[in-house]
Image (cartoon, rainbow, N blue to C red; front, side, top):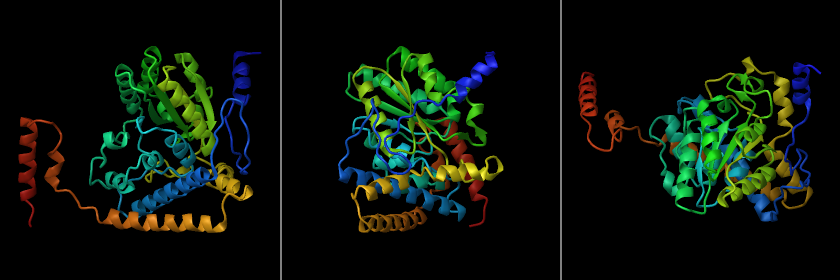
Length: 365
């Protein structure tokens, strides 16, 4: 077999995928991962998924109406975020990109504070220490180094906690991400690398990032990797719980590749119809993370129509409240941009502030 043929055979071999709930809502077993959920816990996960999707849809609508400058949708990735987010303990620290609205929900971050960032009226709006949820990171992959540094601090404090860091498939091509893998490995840092592989880095498909499944990269750095069905909230919860527990107990890092799909645009400035076919999107609609939990609840008689209606009503109220509070956010004063650049007074900042103030005074009141 030629080298190219060998590579082709490797690519065609189906990778291991941890799945506990099929797209049809059937519960399946896995020898290494399981999760024992009460009916109330399953209903709570379903509620999380629905409410987070409603937040996302409202934000997209607000941006289309000119109320947000931009928005990065999580549509289709709710299970990866809710499953992993609900696996965190209060002492664990999460480092997001700019799309982890579901994890923010799990960390009790008020969603209107997310909107304030994309509206341009705050610098993030929440206290990372209060929520153990770091500020959004726009620079692709840089948060992985921040997260490893934090994890090494946990290690030196001898604390019983772990760090989780989120990034996309495109970020795996960044030097920062690969450097963070090296540091985490050689220092045995208590961290979980959570890659949401939504298969499109803006307009670049996954095959432009790797020749092998992403989770296999971990072995080259000396720690385990696992691929999980990113549209299966049960599996994402089980896999992340186990990886976090391994990190807390001194077993080092784990790379989780949540195999999912970005149903919407990369951001609201993107047009995905220019680079992907409609049939691909339609195929993934059949794997919807919300519908499979709903099917599971129905089939096992764990919820009735009244429950689903009540969740839909709560989602509608959440959307209306979010819109009202977003539109009521006050615009900051122009000179506020110079605040909090440095902790102490800074001569250059003072000079720039004075120059900008003079520029503003040149306009008619």
